[in-house]
Length: 346
Image 1 (cartoon, rainbow, N blue to C red):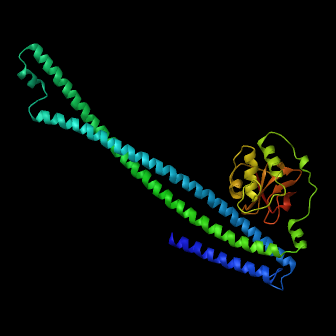
Image 2 (image 1 turned 45 degrees about the vertical axis):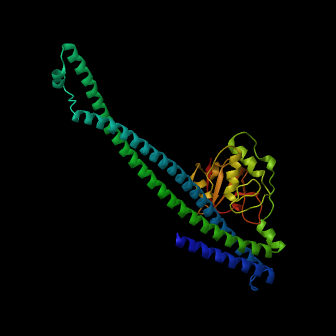
């Protein structure tokens, strides 16, 4: 864990340096830190940084999901270990009680109460007395056998309970270690994203109106009223997604008023009562594959080879998505949202 903390410390230090650098960039050179950089180069750098930040953000989202999963495993394992330990304690108490009974019978036998038919005949002075003695001794014998079996069974159960307690305790320890590892990775990714975000915001602040317009792209003739309405989860999700047109892009956000790409998909389907995976990569791994020629409103379209962006098909060749910092949620033609990868239906 020490090396993990060191990596996070270095990233935090780098973040501080990046923030100072960004401040210097904004104060000393509003347009560019490099006088030779052209507006097109600045815009290109911004887009590249934004793409990198989105990858980091989706990786951070995945790390958060895994961290939450590991923490849940820790909680379940600890509860199970506690129950196993309590069962072991109870079993030990039962075993002690059963052992006391067997020990008591053993002491009686040692002192002369021979539990057999010959002893009954020797001490009986009449046939009826013999029957009574034999009956009593049979009861004692059966009780002794029952108590002995109880000791054996309880000992066996106690041994199993001890093994279960040890196993669940080991599972809990492993889960805690895995959780700590995921927490370290999450913190590292959060630090990486903060560094990238500082750079992106600095460049965004230095952009001219023309560059901002180029970043946001043209406005398309899309009428939200043309989107099919209905009560199916897919159509409810589409209506929910397009209702957020104009909301800002924020890394790691899942609504209700700001989103990242996969967060918008997650929120929209949540409004339809359906749970889908958190990240674009996980969304690619779920649902059912759909051919591009068979797209229907509500299908998720995954972009880029490494599945780092996602949008929702709304019909008529358009997709709604949260694209990048500085660009609000919008509806654009399918291929304007990025390099098409594949589509999934939920």
